[in-house]
Image (tube, rainbow, N blue to C red; front, side):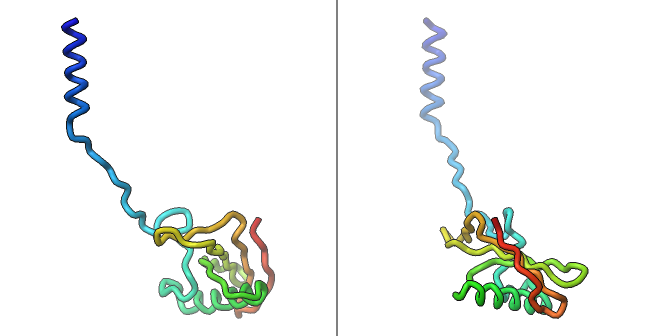
Length: 121
């Protein structure tokens, strides 16, 4: 009985002690799976990449027939560029939200002319 009361007292004291509360910090938008995706006009794009992103965006907006909010990643290939575009579905607490299948790749020649489009699935 004495052991039971000792354990019970210990548990009561433990329950009354001040608990550390860890609040989630606001995550940095530059971390995560799409941290290398940037909006068009982002100063981290080189002048050449900005030209290529502008050409890809112009193609996407023309084919969709409406303005486009997207994030882009440019990759140089042997004969031009591949521009991977993630279409923005919305925003929540300052974070960009994407939706499944909301992406595509625009393939451009080295002069920025359109070659082909590969939609996301």
